[in-house]
Length: 384
Ligand code: NAD
Ligand code: MG
Image 1 (cartoon, protein in one colour):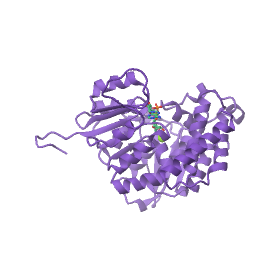
Image 2: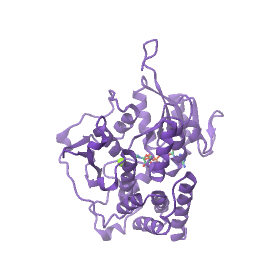
Image 3: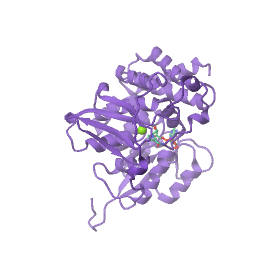
Image 4: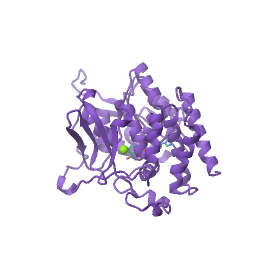
């Protein structure tokens, strides 16, 4: 789009969770794309010093801090409501939701209801409330474009094709740091082991999720809602190099894939520009020889039960995906605090699903009630 003066009109971005891994990655991308996008709003949880630096550099019209800690500018908006305020502002065209966990739900729903594009990194939102998000998008005219690299890959492969040409999608998984560990060693995993991801640098929660494969379960459910495919047409394969970001099999048997070095800069930018592509100098040129060999392995479901537990929760529907998500969030938090073991995470998820999964999920309140119940259940299981 160009202005009467011939300059391209910039699109306003609200970046929620700007101080995190995706948030800081997004600001690197946006810094290179200032002629296309302006940062209209920034929000962070508690890191006010980094938020202040970011606000000075990008001069947004709105700055929000969820947790009122130390000193901050008088113009900042403080408290949980700042996420929804940022996401629904008139000068915002695209909401990049890079908050971690269920805390991002209301902002996603509000942005969709307000007709915004949601560039969604916060996959937990869609897992908890995929049907509510779809309804909000229909009512308000908003849309979700995925930031998750696997879903970005799929979107890039299917854009421009009728959906009935897709036979199956295959999500790739790095397998995490314990891909080839024997079962008995998994019982000895430390927090430091779990935070040492072989191919991606990410926030702590998703890094643990990648080690348990709960992340891949979240991604299967995310794919189900994003692309409208039944669960038996979504497969997962382990691809340790994280170069092929996912594959799409079409009805004629042809398979397309999207490849790049493992960087989130590319899917972040694509979520902002889809269906267009724009020049960007940030991603290093692809070198197929340096990436070789590219290999695939089956998932070891017996060692990583969280994946199947999540897929079963997705199939069950209702509040089951929200229970899966909340039980996982709570268990990961306890694991990171050193209060439960690595293998306790899947045990906690299974127990929560066995107890609560049948709850209804048809409204925001029902989803949040199931979420709170699952967290209480997991804390109770370990007397925490
Ligand atoms: P992170 O922990 O590095 O950052 C999350 C940010 O969210 C924090 O910096 C903070 O600003 C904000 N936040 C945290 N708790 C909050 C709360 N209660 N209320 C409001 N804001 C809060 O996490 P991340 O790795 O950047 O991941 C963010 C999201 O993106 C997650 O949903 C994750 O699954 C998804 N994702 C991340 C990557 C990656 O490479 N990091 C890749 C794909 C998807
Ligand atoms: Mg992913």
